[in-house]
Amino acid sequence: MTPSSRLLTIALAAFVAFAGPVTAQTPAAVTPVTTEKKVETTPLTLPGCETFVYRKLGDVELRLHVMKPKGWTAGDKRPALLYYFGGGWVSGTPESGLRLAKWAASKGLVGIIPDYRTRNRFQTTPEDSISDGRAAVRWLQEHATELGVDPAKLIATGGSAGGHVASWTAITAAGPAADDPAPAVAPAALILFNPVTDTKDGGYGGPKRFGNKPARALAASVPDQMQAKMPPTLVFHATADATVPYANSVAFRDKLVASGNRCELVTFEGLGHSYYSTKFGEAGKAAYEKTITDTAAFLASLGLL
Image (tube, rainbow, N blue to C red; front, top):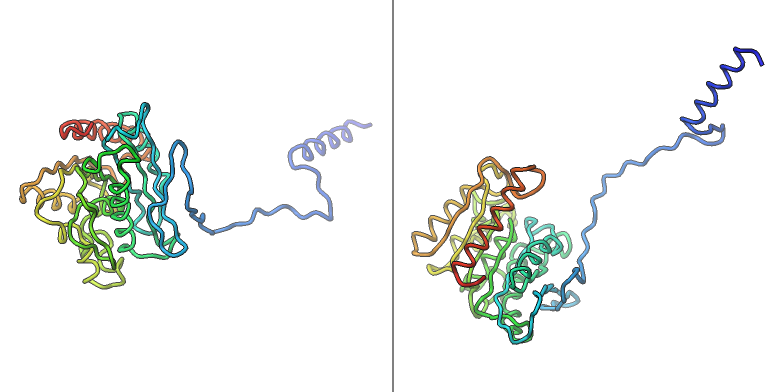
């Protein structure tokens, strides 16, 4: 073999090793491009939790997931922490509440993650989400003995639209949905993360989230529908939140305090929506740690931890 032939053979071998064999019958592979969104599914169980059906609406069964602390017994009458996931009443599933439920159980509380209807999974409205959140609290209070919780010591928490659903569990008036009575006893405390409160113009989404009907948006707005006496409330919000206006939480805090309620607003400067997310790097991590620390101190001050 001549030197030039040898070089040609080596070059061809290198090309085949890099690109793979090429045949006239096989066109180059093309990766299909898809714009399909991931379809959300409703979890029937969650790791480490017992699951109960708390509401049946035709063929729909709504579940809540209960994480019990070590040493739990049915006679405990422990405080319970409920977490309502966010997602604009459109998306979201209970899995996002696992981290907080685990934290609650580690502190001796019963951690509870209710599911509720959203538009993506159930083709429903914000009013339906509110109704389900309140139904979950009513069910828990009715079944408190078997769950080992004190019905007067429920702590309602939630992020974003989940904070809106949580807030409505403390409102004593009938809800904006049909046949939506309030829970028998208001939660002992509210803890809200970047919450939706005001749903009118200037609030999250405004009337466009309610079929462009201002009357519906007003009927769902927490500051406009809450009674004078509300549970002690702790709110976390970041100033650069481009989804839910930070100013809404300031106004919410001010109205609660003006009515003689206890409400504390913890501010995170410069962070955005879901301020505790890893997308904000070390600042997000620090914000999460402060959220947990301040939550524990707040609950301890109320005798709930």
